[in-house]
Amino acid sequence: MTADLFESVPDVRPSREAIAEGAVLLRGFAGPFEVELIADIGGIVEQAPFRHMVTPGGHQMSVAMTNCGSAGWVTDRAGYRYDGVDPESRKPWPSMRPSLHALAAQAAAEAGFAGFSPDACLINRYQPGARMSLHQDKDERDFGAPIVSVSLGLPAIFLFGGLQRSDKPRRFRLEHGDVVVWGGPARLAFHGVAPLADGDHAVLGRQRINLTFRKAR
Ligand code: MD3
Ligand code: FE
Image: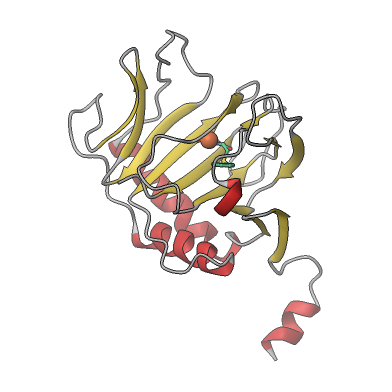
C-alpha cells in the first residue's frame, strides 16, 4: 500500500548509486529528515554562529562553518585540527542532535558501513561564489570510518578526484536532500566544490548547507 502511494509520485524515493569504489550516492536520502534537520541546524547556529575561518596560510575561507558534536573541525594560523571547544565562545560545541546522528548512521549502513557512529559534524554554509578547493580529509584518526555528507539548499557541482591531486576530477551535481557516503578507497580521494551559482532555493533561499559527519577521534 505504502509502496503504491510512493509509486504514484515520480522521483521521490531515494536511489542508490555507486560512484566509485567505496563511494555511494543516495539521492534524496535526507528527504524524510528535512524538517527536523533544518530545525536542528537553526538551534546549533544560534549557539555557535557560522564564521569564516582562516587557513594556516592566512587566507579567509569563502565557506562559513560551524560544528556540532564532541569534536569540531577548526582552522587558524596554527593549523587544521579537531577541538572540543568553539574558539569563538570557548564553550563546547553544541551536541550532535539524535536526528543528525541517526541520519548519518542510517546512510552509512545503507552504503555498507554498519556501526558508523560519528563524533563530529561540520556544517558548511556556501553563499553564491563560495567554493572549496581540492583537498583530502585527513585530520581524522581512523581512515577506516567513512564520511557521510548531506547537501541542503542550492545545488552545487561537487568535484571528485583521485588519490593524487593531479587526477582529473569528475563532476557531480549535488542537490537538496542528497547524501553521499565516502569510505574504503574513496576515503582519501581529493575533492572540492565549484563556486556556488546564485539561485533561490524554496526552503533555504540563497545558500547551500552541507553537513559532513566524521569519526574524528
Ligand atoms: C570525498 N565539504 O568539509 S562534502 C569538507 O560540500 C568538504 O561542503 C564539501 O569537503 C562540501 O571537507 C564536500 C563531500 C565529501 C566530504 C568528504 C570526502 C566528499 C569526500 C572525503 C573523501 C572523499
Ligand atoms: Fe573535504
